Image 1 (cartoon, rainbow, N blue to C red):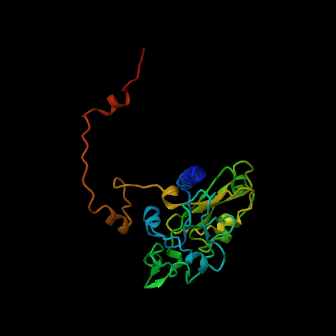
Image 2 (cartoon, rainbow, N blue to C red):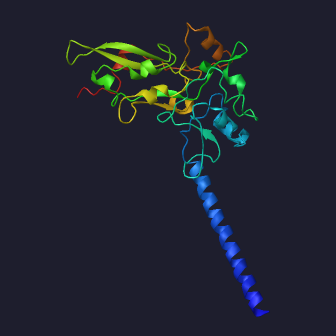
Length: 256
């Protein structure tokens, strides 16, 4: 009877220890999952918060991808477990015209309406991220002719264009500077994949990380679409104290 009691207590302690260890491990995974905001999702993905609450981690989008671009996050990836993502430097999105990963999603975490044009799936409407250029490590800014990212871009001359600038250092050559149009860039990562530098000088980041927000204080007067953006903006009036131009320019100047 005493042996049975000791065995029962020993097993109970072991079970509690295993549960506690599992809790610590799971907590570690959860902390790990929230430690990296720079996650690139498949085409048509909802905003990250909505995506995480809608995605059921089924992996059907990963199975549908014909290029093995998409990966399901596993322990150690520092991303929400079981959710799809991709690393452009390794395997970018190859911009399938039928976007097979999106219709495969059973919960609308990948929303077809976000990649539609004229009632048809249009991969060019996807917003997986935005490419950014590091001028310090991009050899085009050194004067070395390189257009690898430009040539790799599926929206040639639109998402990435080349700007000619005079090379003042030599006085004889021109820079071919890559410029990213954030409005057209889909974030496919083909440019990052093609970059010739050891660590890519052009890289894709989530839209909310890579882009700013103008707000309602500035408007493109020549753009009708931009004018609609501020139709409901409230007027802000400022009052400036009357002061002559001369007094203003001489403010805080000490003549002594």
